[in-house]
Image (cartoon, rainbow, N blue to C red; front, side, top):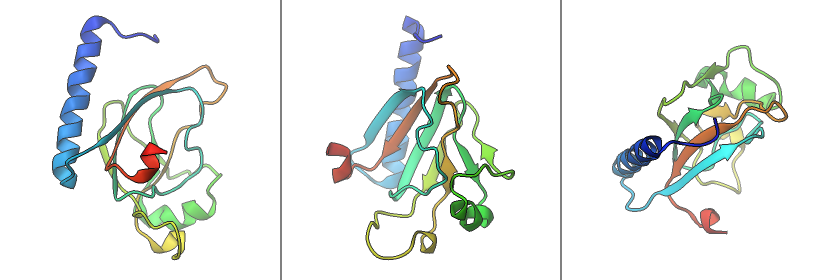
Length: 144
């Protein structure tokens, strides 16, 4: 199913609005960057930490974001392309508030920063698609 019925559009809009307000309150941000997208590729296919302070994710359709327990972060990042037997998956409509590694882009090694290690599920070429909501505190990269 690729389309939403009128009632579903309103429900989705209400849900996104509620999550935006909640995220803004939790992060004490007056503005929120909102990305609602349909994906049919692997998206973020490698294990990684986001270069943000916090990111809110929820999946409305399709396979959900995979993550590993923080105790497994370093080993998983070292094998960033490999599957992890310890990977867990969010469920539809789970709301995940992920801590990122901050906005550091220069200096410091990736493994020196805390943050949840996660990736998008591998769906490229499968005919499967995902509908994912991502909320961030706005930063210059969002407007490039």
